[in-house]
Length: 200
Figure 1 (tube, rainbow, N blue to C red):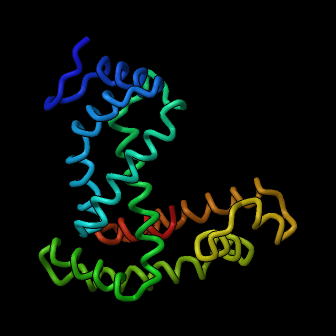
Figure 2: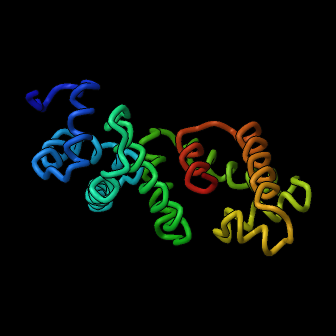
C-alpha cells in the first residue's frame, strides 16, 4: 500500500503507519513527521503563542511517539494520538511557566490581543478571583486535597499517605472538586485555557 502525503489520513493509512512504526521503520516515521509536523506546530502555537516553544513541542511530540511506538494500537487514530501528546506537553509547559510572573503576563497579553478586546484581561482577573472563591467554599478536606494535588503537585498516593486516607478517597474528592469548578467557572477562551493549565 502506498503511503501518501498531503491529504487527510485515512484509517487504513494510519493503521499501516502504526504497524511499521511498531517495527521501528524510520522511513514511516519520517513520513508521519512530514504529514503532521506543520499542523502540530500550528496547534502548539495556538496554545503557547511562542515560535521556539512550539517547535520544541513538535520535537518532543515525535520523540514520545518514537519512544512509545511499541505500545501503539493498530486501530487507534494516529492523528488523535499525536495531537493529544502535543496538547499534554503544551499544557504541562504552561502549568510550569505560570509560576513565572513574566511569562504569566506575557500569556495574558497575547491572549488579550488575539481576542481583540480589553474584556479578556478583565475576564482573566475575574477568573482568578472566582477560582479562589470556588476552592475556598470546598469542605475543608476536599480543599486540602485539591490544593495538595494542583498546587503542590502531589500524586493521589502521596496525598493519601500524608492524610491517612485511601487513594480512592483522594480521587473522589478531586473529581468532585473539578466537577464543581467546571460548573461554576465562567467560560472564555483564555479562561478555559488557564483552567486546563492549572487543574488538569
